[in-house]
Picture 1 (tube, helix red, strand yellow):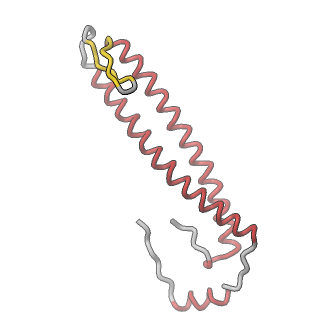
Picture 2 (spheres, rainbow, N blue to C red; picture 1 turned 90 degrees about the vertical axis):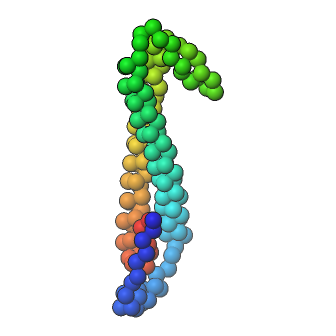
Length: 138
């Protein structure tokens, strides 16, 4: 949810004097870059939440498989269909899937940190230039 903040009349009057700040092409490019990074960050956070959920589901499934009989055939989803496979094979496939999801989670987390670092730099530059005349809080 977005929180709205009202500024006082004194702050508005103080900002009115500073509203003569001219926005250069470089400033506008930085503002646009920040906006694109913010949108990308939100999409990646959503994707990361999905991957973390997948990882948790796989871990839960792995725990459930520990209770299965060694001789039992386990239905395992491959693509759009289920194959009945022996327990050791299913555990192997599940382990591989968990490793892949873990790598994807780590990659997303690293990429998110790079995006956030760039956003912090842009935010510092833009607030230094425009002060309270610009709002980069989401």
